[in-house]
Image 1 (cartoon, one colour):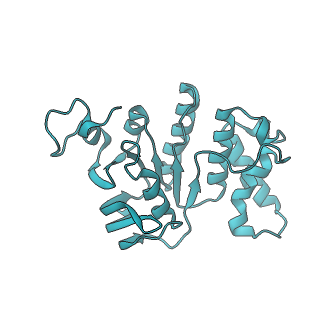
Image 2 (tube, one colour):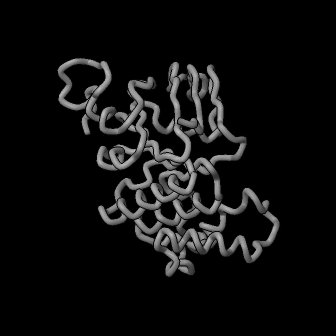
Image 3 (cartoon, one colour):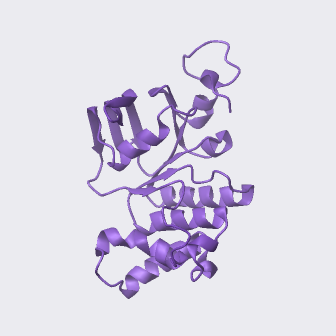
Length: 236
């Protein structure tokens, strides 16, 4: 299987304090990978390392291509008071290829519109981002990530707090992207969302406990502490 990202003995953290320790992981290309684990296990830190916004203290991180990944945060950094529309928010995903001071071409606008339509928010294009529900705003952020047209899409809890229909809508789009050749990695606390992925990484205390098919990982199929009521003592 072709690997999109390979991590070998990676440690990373903040202000000299390690959060990840000795992580060696394989992220398969053109697949959906879920990153799971209890709070404080290092999931968001791992996402930062994959995105290149957090350097590894030790070890190596190798990407299959040199293209910049797209990172979708858990919530928007745009203040609600700003008159920023949904279309503006999604179009920000094109800034990496355009630069801040170039006008969007018809193609750039077409990409943004297609991404909004794909997430079912095309009709909200003129609405201010601060007027949206939590689910609508989350779909706008995912559309912004899609607009970057990256071959590696990273998402921090993209379905948290959404109703079941919205959760399935987003995960269906992510699976479609993987089928089109995009590598998708998302952090989740939801075991059902993790099971819908094709690959799974389980973190605990900053270490990679297990990686592989979600069914085996979430069932605790590899050696681990005995007699756990949930895999590796996770309280799902």
